[in-house]
Image 1: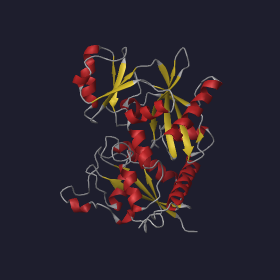
Image 2: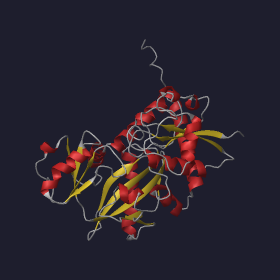
Image 3: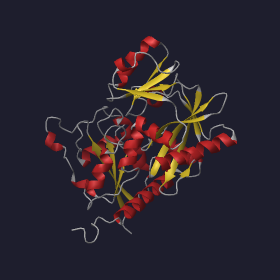
Image 4: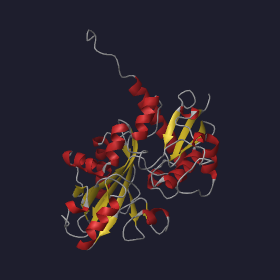
Length: 355
């Protein structure tokens, strides 16, 4: 049997481009070479695809500039709008591991749908919902799933005072890796925190602060998803921000989390409920707060395109649940092909007699 040609998309325009590159390198190294041909393809800071040979060099280097550029920045024709490698005749499946804006918000997924290529992860609508924290939490509230309270604003003048007791968290509505997130402890700092969040998105979310443990659960599947064991993140800083995740390396991970049995089971049940309510397919990591003193479980966020770096919780959680990374990638690819085949069977013909 011929090997599946798996196109690994990485990079992109967001502040998470370097995280994306590291995830892509992990995935490329873990794919079984007897079954898959891994083809890395980078997207530059301008949103254009970079040549395949240059993409491969970027993936192999230990460290590259945070913003990817073509080999010759003065020659933009070196980066194609749609390169040959992403054509259906050249790729069997796409593994999009572009985090953040334009990568996990439904934009890239829509592009792949237009091309007719199967791809790993959530579809257009679920990706967009998962990325938009305000819409996501409204959806969960309608489904009766417990979430933290929050208020959305478009400018600091809309919220002269905190709607919740301090401390509160202020974050961009669309964004990841805790970029632009501030823990506000003093009333006079609220406006600056909102302004910072609005540097990364046109809406900011002000959320109540919860004295809680940070618990994460991985979900895998399409119509019949399954949940991993929960894990706990113990931040090395005041909260689990970008530096704590990727620079300082002081955070600790406890997998499985030391939770009472009924609390761990509730986390797993809620993770599956969130996955289904948001219409996700393939994979997602659901983040929770477990309130200290009460063990009340609240959903914080969902990540429909979680990282695959050495410290990323999604593969760690499945490893602890008996599914090592190579087998996890096999299953994600199988789920992507299954979803694509099911959607290909849908009719696009008008009803008889309509025309």
